[in-house]
Length: 180
Image (tube, rainbow, N blue to C red; front, side):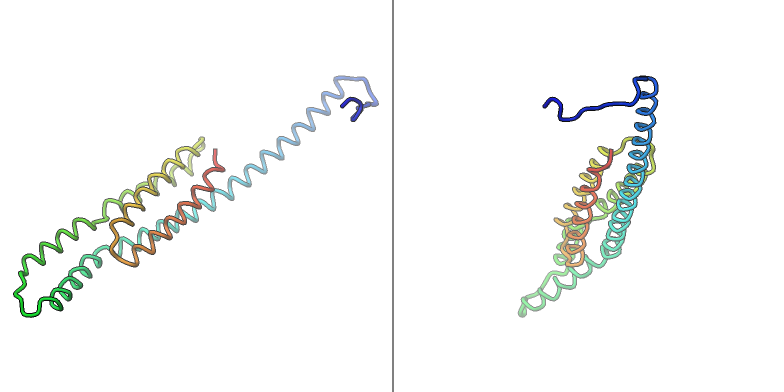
């Protein structure tokens, strides 16, 4: 709409107006850069906090892995004893079942990969480069490993920990959307 805003200056000196415009623009850009720097530092701190939490979950699951197979072996023996009712049980067959279970539920590979992804994520955070897409990709990879942990878990502690890891990964993903 015409004549809604009329600009009248006290001077017709374009050089003086250009200088004032340049100073105002420079102040505005400096403020924007400082705001982005502060926001970036806050996002980085949050990412590091969540990454540390995930790393703690990985350590907790790692400490639990040897006990999972032992607990299964004990449960299997108890169930067989309860059900056998005078029938002879082949100890080798029980050992074989425990070995199959141990192989199927081995989560060592997933824990190692998660550790590597956490280290790589930290390395990216320390880079002076555009890393948003790389971080997003790493979160996808971490999510795959956590999902595999969940599918292999036959332990309540590990299952609960997987849920917590997924929640933290989702929060990481949300924050990474704000990273260039």
